[in-house]
Image 1 (cartoon, rainbow, N blue to C red):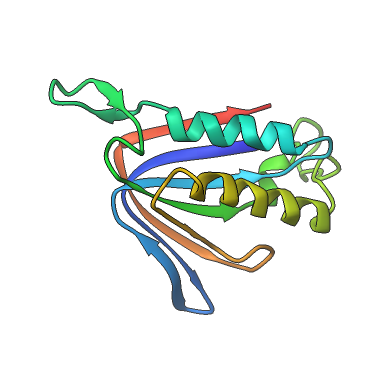
Image 2: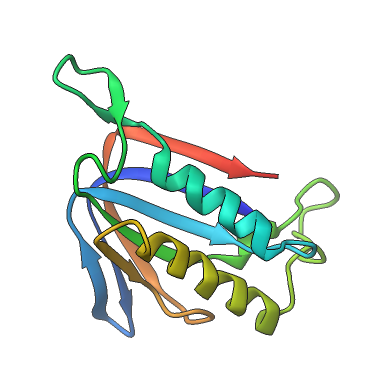
Amino acid sequence: MKIVLQRVKQASVSISGKVYSSIGKGYLILIGIEKGDTAEIIEKYADKVIKLRVFPDENDKMNLSIKDISGSILVVSQFTLAGNCKKGTRPSFDNSAPPEEANKLYEYFIEQLKSAVNEVKTGVFGAVMEVSLINDGPVTFILGN
């Protein structure tokens, strides 16, 4: 699994030119599910996302979690994160999990986040989406393999 986590002031996902989901302060998470990913891996990374302390405290130190600030999360499936660009000029997606399996794990990741965070919104698995954000910082982290 690969996750790109961006601390945002706001973010949205549009499908066919219409806003499908939007959030204010929180995280935009792009997630790619790979072959070999399991429910245990999903639980580990969901817990990491929930507990990660990357929001500023009163001393402007990264010391607060998404829960501490009552932030929101927008989760967008992005299978291209599993792409391998090491050889040639065309990415290989051999490491991407099959769509049915990936969707189940994507939904499970969302469930895990919803159990701890008040507002979790999503894109649509497999859809062509346009993602907009105002990155806060910018602060961006890559989690996973």
